[in-house]
Image (tube, rainbow, N blue to C red; front, side, top):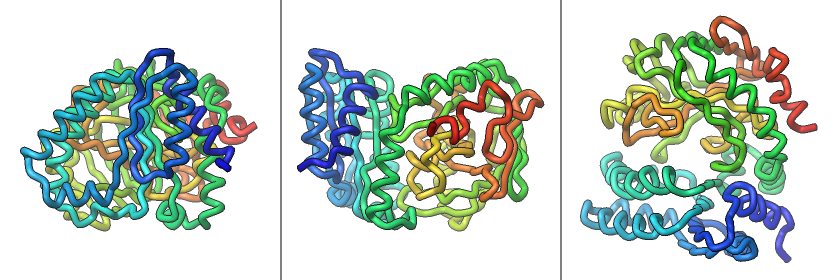
Length: 373
């Protein structure tokens, strides 16, 4: 028998996140996930009147392709995958990974080759801009280990996060998006020496309520490209290109990262030197999913942690563009809850969140006790 939680999640993705309509084609990219879940997605897509197309992938095979890849090979893959992506209206990327560090021994140059062909031409240019899409991680023992939880406890946590009442969250986040759109100056204070200022004036704020990512729970915008000044120190571990970084510290002057350190300082700067835009920031977001309470080295979960913000060196999103372009988009998370050292968020000098909780009346519905009720 199929776990009822799998059925509920498949229903959420097809009928809420993608809102598949009759006659629409939907690409289901299943990467190292159980066939039972893929089959449920196919079943719900067809029930909605959609035309499901499935692509099965393996991270182990992807590693082999990267290690033995060539520009000619990746161009061919990009051309064929772009052809398919251009012909669908919806996309679900269900991404599992038995080994979260599967790509850790693939060089930066070889990973960049993939990023500048398949990722750029298929995902950045077509999927993100021209389809209704949603991506999610699939729970695995590897993820449970990173979260320092038993497999059973992690599965319970996972399905609570992924199948929460996103419609309720959607209503509660509207005032935050409105506040961000009328804000000029933002100031972030946090643990250690974090004191960062920047402007978000004139840049749209985008609510994320389960229609693009599962789990979800953030409102994002972008800083005015040259406005960022000060220091931010991230207290959540971050995984990028198979390498784990702790204690990432970035120092900004006129928008540019002028000093960067972490427990993998050389690797960090290697990524930030990928291109000019990698040392500027493309996204600022506030997270508030009440079921995401601690980091687990998975960006889709960690960037939604209640009481967190994330700041993103690299490419901006078209929906909230500050003009920054890059092959990099690296979400780095800072928690501001008391257990992580606290912190404050100011909009135009007004304190709107302290120690991870919103303190102004119109935003209090986003606090965990209200979103869970």
